[in-house]
Amino acid sequence: MARAYNFSAGPAMLPEAVLQQARDEILDWHGSGMSIMEMSHRGKQFMSVYEQAEASLRRLMNIPENYKILFLQGGASSQFAMIPMNLLRGKSTAAYINTGAWSKKAIAEAKRYTSVHIAATTEDSKFTATPDAGDIDLPGDAAYLHYTPNETIGGVEFLYVPETGDIPLVADMSSTILSRPIDVSKYGLIYAGAQKNIGPAGLTVVIVRDDLIGQTMDMTPAMFDYKIHADNGSMYNTPPTYSLYLAGLVFAWLEQLGGLTAMAEINERKSGKLYAAIDDSDFYSNPVEVNSRSWMNVPFTLANADLDSVFLEQATAAGLVTLKGHRSVGGMRASIYNAMPEAGVDALIAFMAEFEKNNA
Ligand SMILES: *Cc1c(COP(=O)(O)O)cnc(C)c1O
Image (cartoon, rainbow, N blue to C red; front, side, top):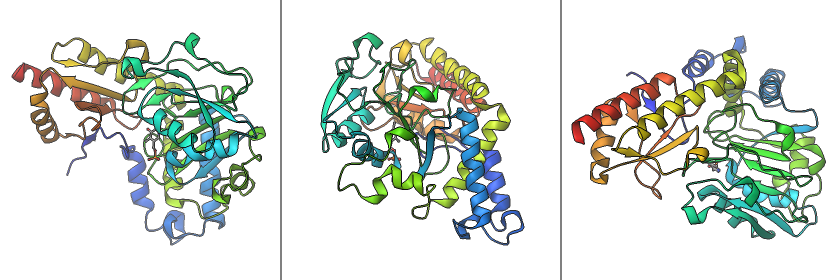
């Protein structure tokens, strides 16, 4: 069967070259007579895989020496609790920007541990925009400012980095990490579940400035303490070895492609042409303000919602799958992460034009 263009928001497509390499190595990794899945995580062979993955990510994102890279489990959702547990550092307030569904989940979890100051919210616009930089109200005693650079469900992305002075900036980059170069030194902590732009589910990447760890709240479980993971090189317990191996292959694929500058060019072009196709038609629309549109998740609606199911059916038959919008939003959503080939976006645009011609 031919591979589909899979527009799933996550778990999402992986680069075909990575899957082929994983297939070739699945029974016998580099003459070891074993699959990566069967190896000790502390053995020399797996350690080399681990170290290469870490070094590759450090090069790709240009991560400074004073930042730890942690490979954890529990998804981005566990970070919603780990962040206040580790970064409150005796303070009693944390600031959060609310730009939609994932911000709200982070805020709800933080409220179990601290008082939360909402530094900005775009709820009035039904979360179709990012706040203006000048509207972010950050109290001086906040332990950190948390935001969601890309809201995966709403398709809303910050095209700027909030200024926080000395207050650590914390970013849930689950659906935008590795989509373009960023200046890591502007952040105190960056985290991402792997299943969108890094690799398979089961792995969570945390990049944290080293002076922020080690002041964990009392009663924090060992597994939730960044310092313990950092001191043990992410091997306090068994890491998700196979997910880590695949993430390493994805990092190598990105480096070969020319790194994040090259990836950003492709992503800007892919999303740009999809938005142009939507904007040029009266049949499709996207509600997000132009200066807040996501490069990664493009929600759109049909002029007549009665046609949604026919659209999805015919798209699937054409090899364009998982385009159904999130249940909270309806309509369609095309997630076009790094691994979505440009040809997949072209095929979607051609399909949309044909569908409009036949149904408008
Ligand atoms: C997918 C996603 C999450 C949740 O990730 P899990 O790994 O399933 O916990 C959190 N935040 C954002 C922005 C996401 O896209």
